[in-house]
Length: 248
Image 1 (cartoon, rainbow, N blue to C red):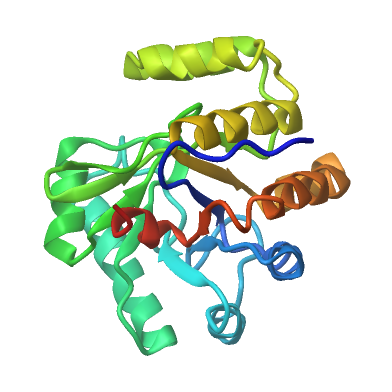
Image 2 (spheres, one colour; image 1 turned 120 degrees about the horizontal axis):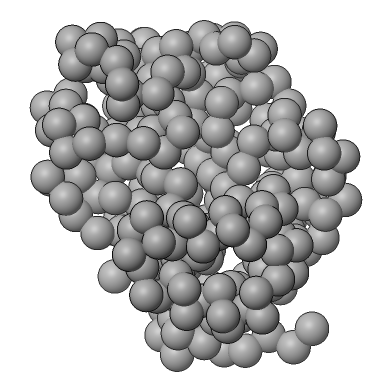
């Protein structure tokens, strides 16, 4: 595959949700290919989660972000509980890490403006969403940098992508889907969006769940995409999610 030079600064990042112990397999692959990533970790969940010692170990090489205390979706629960989930997730992670935690990811991707206010008041500065098909840099809302994503390490059907784009009214997302040839195989769509980010000087952001990759037996596909990303090491900045908010 030929690698196009970006028109201006290109950024590449990855992020991984739910704090499953298989995150260490993701971390090993990121290290193998020289890539950066942010791991969003709840303290407890219905699935297995990393122990405090494992979280601290993972934080030795990668950025750790909050993902609520008990991995709950904020929309639909009592505001007081939502605030507690946000505030407690930050304080628990900071106790474990011994340093500030300034970035958050919404379980399920759903949130309201009130939740953004809660994040800001708790001391967060950025929040990752599940907005797909984007190569845009973060945008600021209610004092929080909102981070979109390019592709999930999971093959959705075309209807899912169209629904995601329509929900946001994103003309750019629809254009990016057309540019990709409307493929729904996630490695192929990742390649198309990566090439578009290189052309436009945008952000390529891959995200997923390690447990989902295991269930789908897609580790080989993930390695394939990581190798593809590594080809851009001389043409892009590899950064954790927070770095997206600081690079011009």
